[in-house]
Image (cartoon, rainbow, N blue to C red):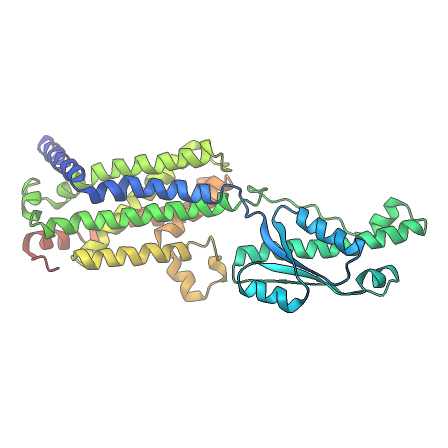
Length: 390
């Protein structure tokens, strides 16, 4: 036992020297993860996009129509940047990406409102950018509803109705809205907590496969195994322990920054964050080692890791729910570590449910951690017999 520990220690010292000498490790393990972390958290610092450009086509040009324009401009997410003389001009502005949408108030709108002839106003918005289109649609729909309600309120008040009677008529059913865990509808709170771990996962995948592939590339694999008396598990432990500690420092630093500095909502205990970070790192390293063992080639293993990490962001279920995907894609989603990470985060951290509610996803991450056991023999054979081919 003491001999094995000494061998692990010697390999760890060797690995630390490699990490210090090779700038790729410095960039991919420290610099790039930190840049990704600060970039995405600052990009969505306001929670929601604000002051998105919209236009107005006001052919009525009355105090009522101008009041609608002022109210729309007062919304946090909308900012009127131009008035257009026609719908055609406003449409061309959308096509030139100058505005995301516009409100069209035809001539005679106020006259029809006052005479209860039900005028029509229109709003047009671009769904090329999904978030901008959805948020502006909400503002444009709200301002259209408020406009008709304001005129109806003035008319009913002139007829002698009380405020309570007016509100009962205009809004017969009152909505009591409760947004659990993210009442601010903050994009930062639910997108950053998936994208940043996904990007860190990409770096862990790549570095795990790269560190094994470079042993073949630089013809140092036999010397590496000799330091462990050709015991592959001892060699792997000594090689990846320093990397594990560095990745844990990065992941725990990220969790502290977003949950305790930026104060992202989290109902789970701090120990849940510790466990999630540990499972995140070990599962990603397990997959990276497995990818190299599956195809013991630096180029091919890096390609597999890149593809799997990129697909993970789509298959995690944050941007598009997995339950809305086709059946085969729903089954395929279980093969991505980020999907299980995201589900544990969503269930146990974001919503504060007990870990037993996410036990299957925890078991799946544990399975990713154990994947190297399936290919250790192939990795050993590759290190001893394979010749590096660029």
